[in-house]
Length: 82
Image (cartoon, rainbow, N blue to C red; front, top):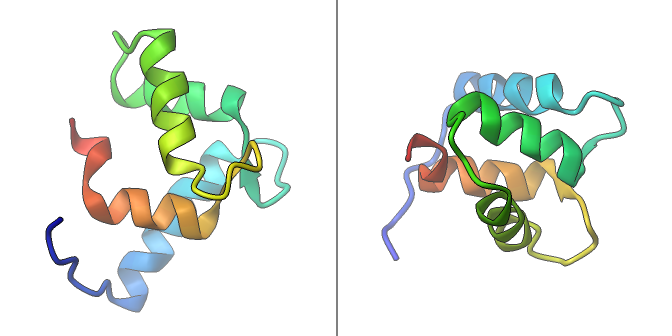
């Protein structure tokens, strides 16, 4: 595991804007449908199985939703760049 650099307040705000953009129902969580839209926007050729696997990895507490803290941790790891 690589050490993560702390983000500035401005960087966290930018990530929050990204999170809010994909949180279509504005409930503070990203569900699988919203996450599918997010990954499709980042990588149009992403397969459904890969989306489901990534979702379950990011949803650390297993509640069926990605909250902002989970999203931020994923974002900091740079997984979205692949």
